[in-house]
Image 1 (cartoon, rainbow, N blue to C red):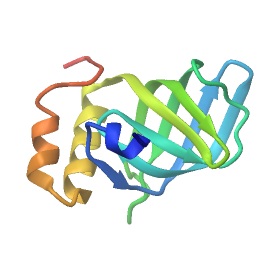
Image 2: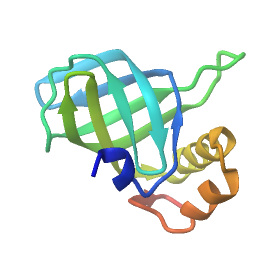
Image 3: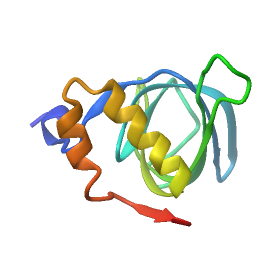
Image 4: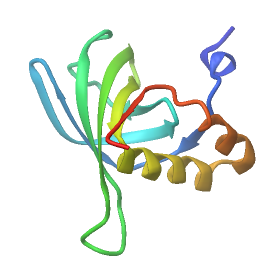
Length: 127
């Protein structure tokens, strides 16, 4: 079974800049490829290892300088020749709401994507 068949969460194309802080690595302006309720995928050969914890800063591109910035804790689950897959471990409530909106608004089936958010896949703090 390939990885796309194992996914249980809606994944949407989402390209933006992400900063990653992990043990021994501080990476700025890494490009994301896609995003889901559960995690994201970063493009490129990055000095990261599966199992490593990390802190993510996702820069949303907008018309205004005050575009939201999302802050998340994650765990690297896969490193392959194309990039790195990261699972979200926790985030604050405001970041969670932005994530929810991004996935639902960009999903091919917004209603199915919205149902997925009824069961959080990680810790949401500060509600």
